[in-house]
Length: 102
Image 1 (cartoon, rainbow, N blue to C red):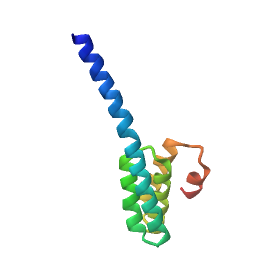
Image 2 (tube, rainbow, N blue to C red):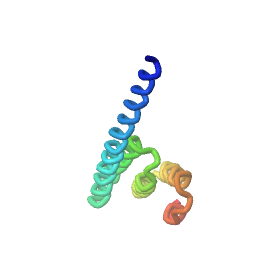
Image 3 (cartoon, helix red, strand yellow):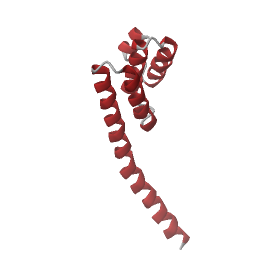
Image 4 (spheres, rainbow, N blue to C red):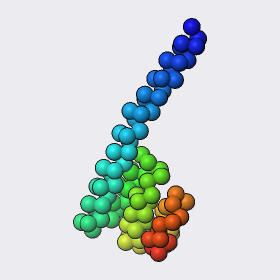
């Protein structure tokens, strides 16, 4: 009886992980796209907020960290920009654009 219960719980947890993961990744991409649109419109404060939403949904979303850093540079918030670039480097130190922007 206990074995069946645990097996059912593991199966349910597995299904929940599969169902929830793509949704948050998709939502993170939607926020990232909004941030990019704001950058294109010169709305850097709004873009930072959008990139932060993407990062909250997917903390390892390296491009969101990079774009957040770039938007912060545009706002002349250099110390915050460096922190964003540092996060991007922790996630993927091979992206040369991060090192250049930092």
